[in-house]
Structure formats: C-alpha cells, structure tokens
Amino acid sequence: MHNQSNSTTLSFFKLESAGGMMLIMAAALAMILANSPFEGIYQSFLSIPGEIRVGPLEIAKPLILWINDGLMAIFFFLIGLELKREMLEGELSDKRNIILPGVGAIGGMLVPALIYLYFNINDPVGVEGWAIPAATDIAFALGVLALLGSRVPASIKIFLTSLAIFDDIGAILIIAFFYTSKISAISLIVAAVCMPILFYLNKRNVTSKSPYILIGVILWVAMLKSGVHATLAGVVLAMFIPMRSKKQPDYSPLKSMEHDLHTVVAFFVLPVFAFANAGISLQGVTADQLTHSVPMGIGLGLFVGKQVGIFSLCWLCIRLKVTALPKGMSWLSLYGTSALCGIGFTMSLFVGSLAFGEMGPLLFDERLGIIIGSVASGVLGYIILHFSLNANKKVP
Image (cartoon, rainbow, N blue to C red; front, side):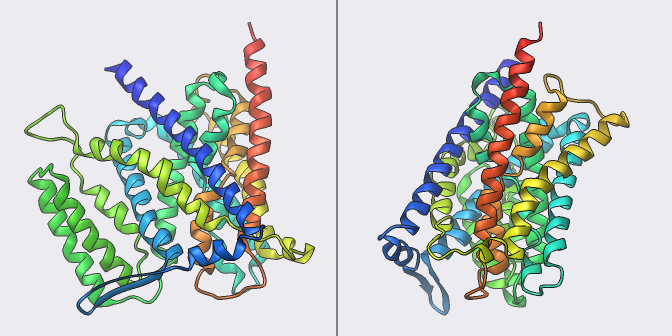
C-alpha cells in the first residue's frame, strides 16, 4: 500500500513537471506571436466570437473568455478534487504535515499583497490588483524543479505542492469574496438549487459521473450568469464527488475523475490558457510602463514578497518549535523553494484578468509584472536549489 502511494505521488510529480514544460512552451509561443508580424492574426484568433443559445438563455463571449471562464472551470474542478483527496487521506490529513506549508502559504499571500498595496494604495484602479502576486503556479514551479533532476528530495516536492494547495484555497476564497461582479438573484437561486441535488447524489453514493457532470454544467451556467465567478462552480462540484463506492470498496469515483482530468488539464487546459493570456506585445513598451506602480507592485510582490513571506514565517514557526524542518530539507533549500513560489504565472494571469479584464484600455499591462516577477523567481529559486542540493550531496 505504501509503495502504491509512493508510485502515485511520483507519477503526479512527473505529470506536473511535464505539464510545466508545456506551459513554458505555450507562453513562449504566445510571446513570439505577439511580437511578430502575426500579432494581428493572434489577437483576431482570441477575439473569435462564440455563442450558445437555448431559448431565452444566451451565452456569447469571445474565445479568450470561453477559455478563461470555461476551460479554467475544469482546472478549478481538478483543484477541488485534489483538495478533497488530500484532506481525507493525503498529506493534509495529518495535522503535522500541514503546519509548515500552511504557515508558509499565509506569509506567501500576505507579504506580496502588502508590497503591492504599498505601491498602489492611492490608485483606485491599480488597487484592484492586490491579489495578483499572492498566487503560486504549481505546474510551472515543479517544471523548474524537474530541471534539477533526481537530486530533488521528495520532501521539497511535497512541501511545495502542499503550500500550493493552501495557496489555491486562498485564491478560491479571494475570487469568491473580492472578484464578483453584479449579482443576479435568479441565477444564484438556480445555483443554490443545484447544491441539495449534488448532496443527494453524494449521500445516495451515486458513482456514475454523468449526473454530476450534468448538474455541474447547470451550476456553471448559473454562476456565470449570477456574477459570482463561474470557475468556482468547479470547486463546489468537486466537494460532492464521492471518495469511495459502497458497492465497490476498491473504486474511488473522486480518484478516477482526478486521474482522467490530470492529463487533460496539464497538457491542454493550462497550456491553452497560457497561450491565450501570455501574449504581451513589447513593441513600444517604455521605461514608464515597466516602472508603473501596477507591474512594479506585482513584480516585486512575486519576487521579493513570496520568498520573504514564506521563508520568514516558516523560519519563525520552526524556531518556536511549533513544527520541524522537513526531512531532507536544509535552510538553504527551504529558501530556494520559497523563492520558487514567486512563480505566479497561471493563477496570477487569471486573477489579473478578473481585476482588470473589463476595464478597457489601461495605462499599464499587469502581465509585464507577472512575467518579470515569475521569471526572476524561477531563475533565483533554481540557482539556490542547485547549490543547496550540490552541498547536500557532498555531505558524507
């Protein structure tokens, strides 16, 4: 059983690492196209209108919003499944394993947000982006870890993944409470009606995926129309997927769905999202745009805030003997991992689209800060971990 668990964990890290590489390639391709003669075609492609109409119900959006509101709901559904599994029988089911990454995640969200607010507190538009540097992109971070090869101990990967899960919980709560638009009461009632139906399916231990998917689609449409961000429908749906089948004790509907979705999300959903959102045209970018308070706050929030927030609170927690440094980790490798968490890419781009997406032309591009802060964090984290892992290797 223990070997099977290790094998599952190992395959998860391999999949996430490979997905991180795909993410990097998709983002690079978007940057190349946005800064080439094909920029017009790239932008036109993302603006292709798509419409679904059933009687009076109409959903009409450009392609980029179908990706951000639709495909990303699948990503959040997977996050919800992972979260439920981890809390019931994974790393987060043991309280001793959640203290350090939990405390680190709090520091890693709080300090970047404070740095951002320091630069933008007096700007009523800019202040909306306070949550952008609070996120960590686990796929990208594990992709960088993969470059270090087999020298990386499992404790670093588990710490990074656990911290990212807490980070995702924080992001979900932030989106739910701070990034909702005008609320539609009728749509919220429809969404609310979906909850007891899902609860009934769960209590009856219905293990067929079809009813959950059907109610999940209705829930997504209701949330989309309600003003509460539609991607949250994925998280809500995941909480009602049964962990075990009463008729087949060895079968887990939740794990089956999680397994089916991992490859789709890692190799399609996230790369498509990166391709659609990372295409920043650098033509005509001036020093004033780079040093604008929004990209500056994001870049420094990710690069400085993440490493300072995570490492300092983890250091304090360990020094106060609340918890201990994970086996196989040194202080230097903890610092390198903290720096690596400054890669905010996917989630930061997503929160940025919520904060500024409907405001029209702006004097800044928040994505500049996300790219610069994420790249700088990835490079620094890689260098520190490279030296710390080499140092550990030399210890007899």
